[in-house]
Structure formats: C-alpha cells, structure tokens
Length: 399
Image (cartoon, rainbow, N blue to C red; front, top):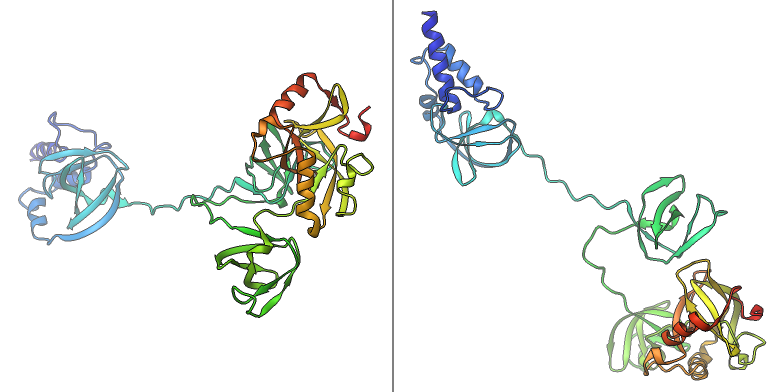
C-alpha cells in the first residue's frame, strides 16, 4: 500500500509542473505545495478542478508581481496544460479571480496562475527632484577652498545651473568652466524639476518721472509718480499706453516714457575715464562714478597708437580690467549714450565685426551689469597677435 502511494505522488508531481521529462526542480516552478497536498490525499477525496468549478469567478483589475517562476495554465488546476512559464518579478494584471487562482495575460497568452505566488505591485514613485542640481541666486565666486580667504577660480553668473557633488558645512563643491572648487551654499537654490519653462516676464523702464494712471489716458486719476529708470512689469498695451505693475501699483503709463531696455551704467576704461581726454562727454552727466574691475577681459593697446585701448574677452577670471562704472543721470541717459556710441563709432545697424568696438553688457566684480565698449572680432584678432597687452589691466598704469 505504501509503495502505491509513492507512485501516485510522483505522477501528480509531473502533472503540476507540466514537464515532459517528468521532473522539474520545485524551487523553480512553485506549484509544489499543491502537488504535495494532492500526493497525501486519495485522488477520489479531492480534485482541484472540481473544487474550482464550484466557486464563482470575480472580475477585477489588480496589478501584481509573481514571487517565483510561475506556470500560466489553461485552467484553474495543476492538471491543466501549461501555456508559458512567467519569470519571477514579472508585472502582471489580474483580470479575474476564482478561489485560489488568478486570471492574467503574458506574452499574448491568457490563462490562470496560483494566487499564492502573487504579491501587490509596488506603487509608482514620483520622480525624485534633482536635489544635486542647484541654481546660483547671485553672481558667485567659485573658490579653491571652503573659505572666503581662498583663491577665486572663476565667477559663476547668477541663474547658472550647477551640479553639487559634495557639501561640507556651509559650502558646496561644484565645477564650472573646467574649474572645480567650493561655493557658499546660502547662494544656491534647488533647480526646478519641471521640464516646462516658466513664463517669460517682460519688463519696461521709465525714461522720466511719470504718472501711473488708473486707465489708458490722461483723463484717468493718477496712482502716483514713479521715478525715472524704474523697472516695471509689462502686462499689455492699448491705445499708446501700457498696463504695468509698478511701485505705485498696477496701472497705465504712456508708451512715450517707457523703454524696452534698462538704463544701465557705462563702464569706461580708457580715454573716457575721469581726467582723460574724452571725459568731457560724461562730465556733469553722472549720478555716481565707481572704480571697480571687470573679470574675464584683457586690455590691449594699438602698437602704433598707445593711447588707443581695447578690452578683449578672456577665459580666465584672473585677467581683468580696471573700469569706472558711470551711472548716468536719467535725464541725460539717452543723449549721453548716443554721444558715446558716436565717439566710439559704434553703429548696431552695421556689421559688428567690421567696427572697432561693440557695445556689450558686462558684469563687474561687484555683480553689477553695465555697458562697455568691447573690441570687435577683427580688431581683437589683430591685437592678440600684434598689440601690447597691459598686464595690470589699468589704463592709467599702462606704461
């Protein structure tokens, strides 16, 4: 009798795994527990197919993962045909349950698997914010060490996205333009994880002291007077007026007193400096004059006309020029800028490379932006090869 039971158990094990060879390691295809239960109970006392047939199927939509390599069978029984073996950790969708069986699809085949070898699929995780991606909130020095007393390697402009690879106290390690060093963490913010660019804000600048009115016309009451060169946020235009947000509230300003470009200071470095031959173009027209340096520039003199100076971009922060940052009084701003353009023979309507100077915005060591007359490409190429470089970067110490 004992011998008969062993033969019956072996026969049922073959039916469970669906193996044509008659053997499959139980650690690979996990319906073993069901096979062992069948081997210990007389076949006439329990039949899986008969038991399943008596349980109503339930329609569901469940996300599952199989915990072992698992047979997908034609029916709700280990005695039915194996359609395919589903590898461990496959993502499955269960569409129906019936007793201890679950209906699913895999590789185009629909069938049943033992529910005990399924687990709930993990919930989808929100994409992690790139916390190591930071944005500079000011023009920021990249330093050799974790101290303001260490050497400045390069100046990182405001709103530059950088990757922080290490933090130590109040300092963050990063790289910029091939230089690796440390920046003060308090001047960094997390980069946005959104792929959609933020709506662009449009600004205007007042060219005189002007009323902000409640409507687009002089018949509307004034909210107050804003000062010349105030930056206002542009909203829309109507009938020659612009709706703006200003220091006096949201209202309307006539377009006659609005400019699309701000009234930036002018940084001068040669004959326009105070006491030099062309300073008369600025005398009496400035609100302030500040001596500072502009990094990433070299100063050159023409070899045959050493009074004639040019500044040319450099890749090194250590190369800088001494300038005087002239803040022009608003009432004189446009006329003075026009006179300076004429003096430097700068005309934005003509090919820039063919001119001696191009007027460009530069950032000085104080983080202030200003106009400067920078050598155009052709003259810069000539001076780099044949000009006289002023190593001090100071026109007044050029000899």
